[in-house]
Length: 163
Image (cartoon, rainbow, N blue to C red; front, side, top):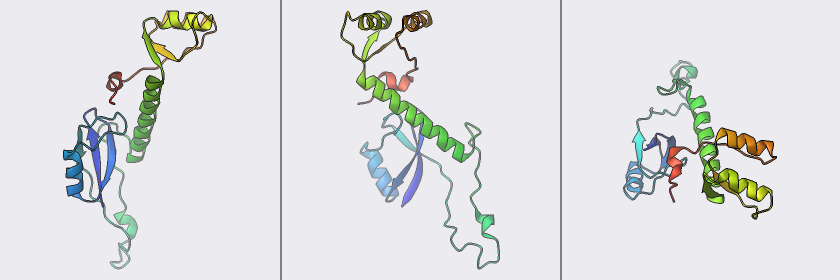
């Protein structure tokens, strides 16, 4: 079993498990690898630390097994431990998944968002899930009128979603 670190063209890092180095190369050449966060298929292998099986290490040599324990090295990019980086990657993945769901299940009304939201609120148009752009003043006015508004930023990588 080969476990490697991978990175997509957008800088998202993730782990891949393969039967062998040939399996990794085969999947990569056929475009079967994709980023779990953004879906991008331009994926490269990153250098990864060698892992050792620790079972039995130290018992026969008289050295404590703790000496061979893997030391968590801070990330060069974030300064966080490996565990913290895993949490950051997981949160990033969950956020991107949620944004993808919003994009797929809503109609983009663009700059007409405030007007469309008002029409639906007043019964002039049937209610439907919409998204679009509103200025901070428009969003505040909608809230003052009792119209719920949720603001979020769509990452550039999702503005033209990968199908």
